Amino acid sequence: MKKKRIVLYKVRLEEDKQLRNHWTGVNVEEAKQIADIVEPVFRGLDREQIVVLYFDTKMKPIGMEIVAIGGTKACIVETSNIFKGAIAANATAIAMVHNHPSGSISPSKQDFYMTNQMAMAGELLGIPLVDHLILGREDFYSFKKAHPGVRLSEVEQIPRKSCED
Image: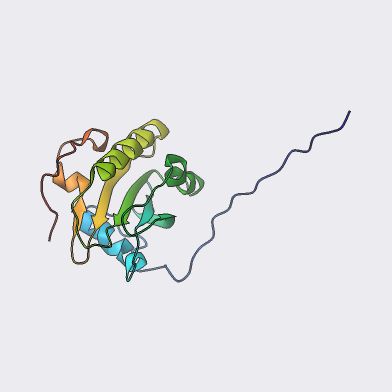
């Protein structure tokens, strides 16, 4: 009988020294801080991209990852890809951020659906989604700020307000 081989996979995190910034050690308490941390990753993009920011138990950023790159109107990502790096980094919470190349910060039905799904998955994994931001050219939309007191897994599909600062 022929022996079957088992493949050994190795997963490792690698630091991108170009993305290191001055946010290390800062407790993140509001959506504006999340937007400021990830904004350099989105500069000049002509297509949608999804980034996940990882936090430790004190809400200090410990890493971020570009999890998906899409087209000019949409970006699709699997739930497993949102949480894979967070698990490897021992993150205790995440924030998800994506951009709208059009500059509009109005969330689509798909944005609400993605927020609901990722928040539910985070609840199951014990790695909560603390916010989902949509970056425009000059401002951003925060699901948490637009829906105060509502769990992200239960946000309505009707945008309430902008998060312009």
